[in-house]
Length: 186
Image (tube, rainbow, N blue to C red; front, side, top):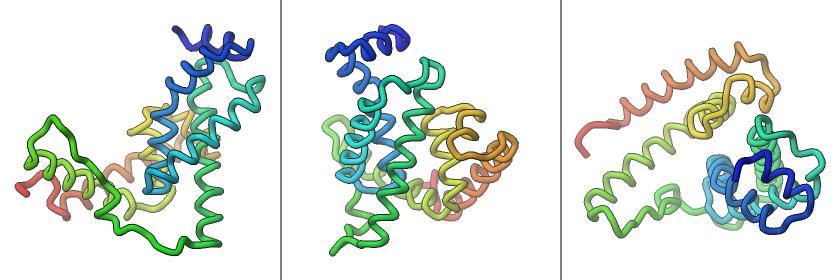
């Protein structure tokens, strides 16, 4: 079902349409939350909170073309709030970065799974070495596929800033990945 029709049904109170709406966006919301928190459980909790907020303000959901950016803006704000709370009250323990990725899969061989885990870990670590702003720009532009104007709206900066920072961030990420041996033989 197309998003405009789905939104109409969701606003009319159709529970099945709401389920379809959540399924349509849950991967992106979880993915963005995971990029901010680095922990799957926190990302799941934040995604659930985001959809509770969205459900509470269905009348304010923009039409189809602005819907994804609006939901990702809510997600970003929820993540920032979560990180602020976490900084004020740090958890009793944190998992080491190596334990954050459980990439076992039934399809690839163990060796392929290992190489994929190493590559993802390198990219994840390199992303976290970028400035917060550059990381946000890359995640929103490259991973979530948002346009320059949508990213500018979410971050509250001019579109030109998004363009220049995205370019600079890509170069910086590539340099960090090359320095870490990304793409070479593991």
